[in-house]
Length: 310
Ligand code: PGA
Image (cartoon, rainbow, N blue to C red; front, side, top):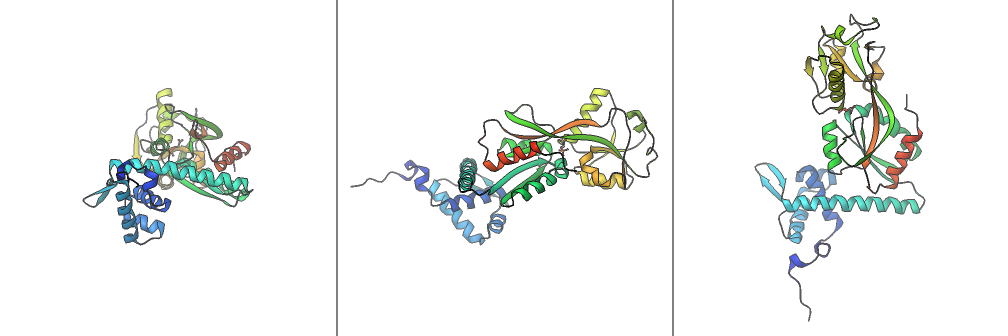
């Protein structure tokens, strides 16, 4: 005679139907929307809802709750989400290791960077992908604060910062310079003057990045260090929008040279100001002790071997 254990006493893996079900759950949990998850998985919405219902039954607790029009994870849902991320990361790693044993360079590079690095990284990613055409790339972009949040949640394998968080147990490997420069529109009265000082800029409006941005952090640090005063006229959460505003004559700015390189000497000019450029460095970051996938390790080695692309 076999005695069946009560459902909640049976171990989780014996209660789950399939990895696909977990994938459906994780996609809904990341989007917090059944519709968006269905679209990204190319499934019908009722199929996704049915899978979620079954999974909740198997787990024995509700995974989501609907409050008004928004979907929230329950504590059980959050717990399952964290577990699923680890499971899929381990599977992806195993998949890549197996591919490697089979001699194929395949897999996915999961990398996230601060907004400013998106002007620099594509050149590296382009060369990497030309060398390893079968490797997929997932490239996420966020400002520094949002990137630290992703790092804390272990959402990606590698991160690119110029101000890596010092309070976390991470490894940060430098790979390129990140000079911050003072930028003016080509027809600005200060263009062509050499030996300017920060005080010479005081009469002109300034456009700066939002709180939470690494660029702003670096400028604020320099202001403290050199006792410069800074009265920004506009705060804008995008390098592209700041560039456009500077080109329209709305003010001066301090941005990474990488973020304006294609317009320098054309519609934008780098002013010759004492103590500039502010010297920063790009770092590629990962958790210390994290088991990196072969693809991530390959990319780290690739970054260290390359000159900064022009
Ligand atoms: P940001 O970061 O794009 O958030 O300004 C750039 C940096 O860290 O220098």
